[in-house]
Image 1 (spheres, rainbow, N blue to C red):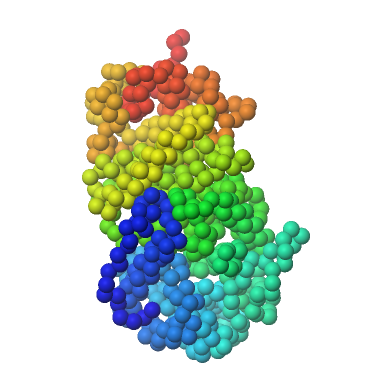
Image 2 (image 1 turned 60 degrees about the vertical axis):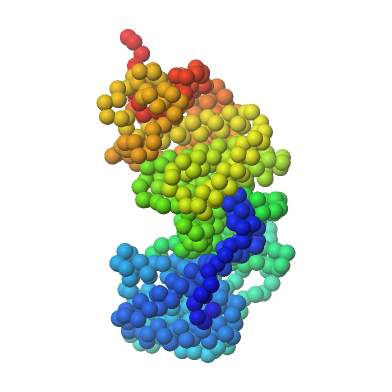
Length: 605
């Protein structure tokens, strides 16, 4: 782990690249990506160790902590390697390097650099070695990566220094209290599985290795163990951190702990069990398949208590190339929604790992491209991430088509995401910015999506998907784009208001020719999920359109526009509903460049 740097380059076998380029990836392909991430992590850590030598600190230099870490790695290579490759370690390294380059902020620099000491203490505990290291304390607390949080009773507020001693897996933490007097805490740190004991779940085996009661409040003194989500895998039980304590769990700068209530943690475990069961319904290495053992951590977003009840869908999910295998997720009530989010975010991790191995495109980072799943313009790297993630999502829904419980919803989402992903793949292939490896990757996605586009989907679901896609694109253009200078617009889809490239069927101007509104802002996409299931008793114009009644929808949008003539949501619905009622060249031109059309005129009289 700590020897000389690797001198031979990585050579990914062609068949593994082909698997990943299809949007999927076998266990062997994922293992290769993990090897690449390991090499990158070691290179970044080597750079960091050189840079932190110049950081002024009240603690001993990084050399002593790194020596402890290396000795522990020799004694217990597997768990210490896990600490090195943990997502939060990657997030910390990346954040601290940005701080050293002056592009990020945070707590005192020495305290952030002192996480290396915390990693060394954690490694020593895993290996059972004996050491004593000075450490940084935050309000009397020391976070131990992969293990949990130790908090001194009545510890001194703010950032300060303490000492952590280890022996045979036991830690003694000492530091000042609020009056400056020395205090100590002794514990046996270890992570624990979520305690599912209760009337609806079996009692887990006694895996805890400490004797004191576990405090519920992370602000209370004592030992707060990292909890893990567990599931049974063919090779044995797998424990995935349910990360609510680590300062670097948020994929960016450090954040305070946000401990889940017991009941909320149990709800996570039960929902995770159900999501794993859904994922287990599809075998193989195709797009949308995910072995839960590949997940490195799940970070709950926002809520820490069971109440109020969560929404059915995942409102927030995120991942970072610096934290391979981690995913920030807001808990939904639906296991199906959680399973989809896990697939989505792991697709991002795979692509980020590929980008670390291969230059895939030349990106000037200009945000000018349409992404069918975003409210804002995107740069090419973001577009590629979206195409890769949603190809996986389309594959996830394709695998649900044969399941009677999900078939209706799955047909809609499969039809929608395959169409949207193929549109973005076309944009990428025509951008002229892909490298040879990037073109090979995107061509692989195109091959997957073209095959799926030939697969039959029930017509009602296909129609709703096409309508939802048209609505999103139309509203996106209305909210983000201005017409060309001097481009007169008419009332409704009239040919004189549309430029030549749209009349000839070109669909839209090249991204470099687009003019973006200065007042554009984020907006909620409420239609994508609404159209998933046709409403039995439609009331709103959107619901009428989802139910297959464009005439009622058109009337509703028109009435709404009488009250709010400039509303982009209503205007998009009006344009799409009218196109459904009056299909033809004029409708296609209006859908291609809706920003050229003024709101419909008010009724006469």
